[in-house]
Image (cartoon, rainbow over all chains, first blue to last red; front, side):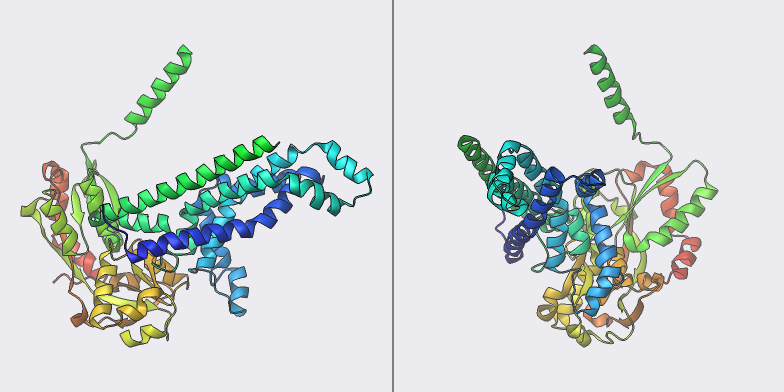
Length: 227
Length: 247
């Protein structure tokens, strides 16, 4: 087995960085959307649900391409950002955004399932005791959603670690800057002479996945015991 | 249950039957930079020889070499450098007797006009696209040029690694990078980007495209005929039309 090169260590660090940032960034939005979908009645709810779940079924490359059209130098949002001096394409920020969008439905799903399981009587009780909707949200729904939050964010974290299709389009493939583990493996795997290097990095990837999924299961067990 | 098994078996059989290899097929594995040339040549060859069907696979030469090594059906391989042809030769996958030079090219820096005019100007740029040097010859030639010009350390973090030379060009055309190292012939196809400077020849070895029949292709009569056609005058004039040097 070939030892890891400095760019491989960079790739591992960048992957973790992207996954953590994407998950943290999505948490508040994911919580808000899951709350909306579960507890609020409004027109066009189905549309919102379809829209949110789209990245789950769309090929990630499509998500990446839309992002490129949107955030690229000639994209309408990219144009505005460019004038403000913000550059997203081919930076780590773009990788974070891509991962966040692709992993978002997983987070919302876990949270929603958890929120739907909350006893409605608890919510009604808090309302009859005079709590405003935000009081109920913070002191009843949020604490009871913690299992969903942890399960959802660990799934999303794992998904972000593996994000490839959207990332390679918007974040490019810059060793040491935006090259995450999957991109590095792809680069190794497309060359006949670096098969062993690809294998080493694949093993690292497997190890990280096992650790994350193991933690995910442990947390799920703990939550089940508590309730 | 019996029905389910029946249907599954039928489906599996259909899937397996879906990609039969026809006798009249010629499988081309060609460096991405030759796409237009080979498309034009194969179209005109197919017109003259009805019944012949081309299966074209364009990509980074290293990637193609790897696919051939792993058993992808291929009759003709044209690489954008000598390295990957030698690689297949050493693996005894290319017909040694057929190996010959198809054409030549040169490396340029293409981008938005005014961004750079020499290798030294590259340091001022933010993002530069090159083909991933592990598998894309254009990227390998470019990194060699950086090293010779002692710019490799300064440029390291600016390089966007594209999967082949055409992706480099796409990034420049969309304005996502300041410029890219591509072949002269690719830059000539660009609509927005212009050739900003030609990389001095003393910085990198001459871009040479070796072509060969693979071991499987040697037995394919149509492939052998097309291979001879590629060395003829018509091929030379098409190459010249797209800006390739034939000697």
